Image 1 (spheres, rainbow, N blue to C red):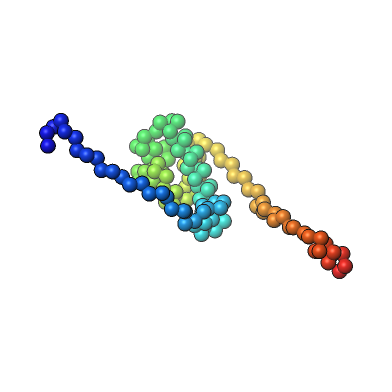
Image 2: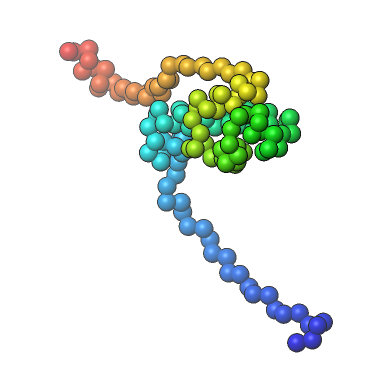
Length: 131
């Protein structure tokens, strides 16, 4: 083939997407089988890590500087910066936040349950009135 000739590009046959096997209703973590307490812990960890990473980014710390600031080993700093939340406890994250001069506030509130609307018919109302 000469340098000026182009090779024909392969044609990609696009097939329509099949229907999804599962549609998530609500929280993905619920569908994965996590308990409510596990979901709460993961969400709390994610929120703390997000705030810590934002603070680290705003101060432009390097990993080497974070080793001294957070008084932690470099592999643990790497896990933190790469968002590996399963490797860090909530207590450890709160300690990091404290060393960065951050404050924390946790709010707990009762679980709000959805009410299911009940439909009544006239025959149901009559039976209740007769009883």
